[in-house]
Length: 481
Image (tube, rainbow, N blue to C red; front, side, top):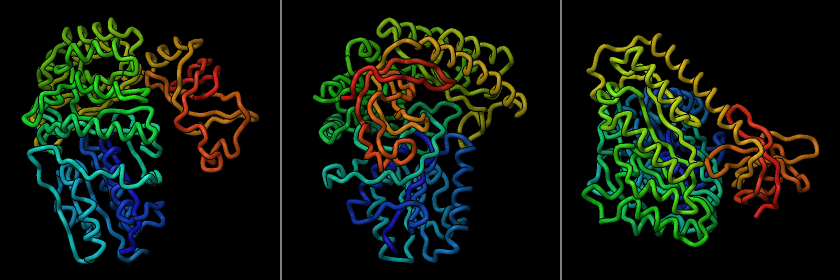
């Protein structure tokens, strides 16, 4: 098999981080990462949090099967949550799939893919859960060359950004979850919680900063419970945050995702004490009704959640809060739903990822009744999203005239005659399209390679001049650094 590959990623930031690591590992072994049309190996990294992402996986594999009819020997590997769930069933349904690997099995995926390249008849399944965090081979120090970002991202969770350059980095600190919320398949597809050692996390973060990362995001299913499992070494999440924040040269630090029931007051205080901890937190609410939260098994109520929000805003008044919301959970009444809308108004989330409930195999809510009819669930979802759009617009409008430091990511799709715009994010994680005052670079407006990506990873001071529906428009007021 020609050792060329292309990665397609569905789901959360953890999947994006996994895909980035796998790409680096394969490149270090002599594989070439290429555009889709040139690839012989396709890695599909999957998500099964809801039914829709799972169906996307089957659709993608069907598309690749049709594509492969003109490329004898085309091979696919399926990883992530759907791979853990379906396992060897992929071999039967899609004969060109020759490797399936779960969240713990990804550590062995590079060796397995090398084996597939040597043996055209081999099929391998890496589906066992491990008792401790499966530390992966170090691919950061093997080569100074960063793989090109030749993988596609279809993110349905908190926004996923491929780590195509070294200015931003995602670092896993744990794997799995012990909460077993009634609707959630994660403990069954990613296993029980396993914390990575603090030394390993710090070592990776240190290397990332030395290689140019200005912003690091710490990743886990529930970072607030880091270190509390059997594999913990006595370092909790608040202490880990402080150790990472102290790394010389790190300008920004973020983390996701947080379960409200486990948030430590020391983590809340850190927002007011650590200068480089960004004033942004994704804090899933899921529902605004105490009865629905009880049925979901969330182990907090409205009062507890609002108390956390108040403490966060006391520690950092400018903190930007985002959330996850589920509508149509079994037994949800119109009054329950009205309480969710009321919580949205009280907290004023800047954005939210909202979904209509769908049954997932093996979870407790599968057996709960009464089920909310699809048409009612869809109507509630539209009402919720309409309210969120209003709150988002108002929140962004309030920022007009303010100044912010924006970490530039790429040339913006917005380009005006005689001006150059770059897309980046402010400390709150909001997208800002900045009009640069310097001369327009060749290729700006679409050809990033021609522009040399000269501003990628640079910070620029910008004045917000206009709020759009889901982003901000800014003007450079100080030269990039």
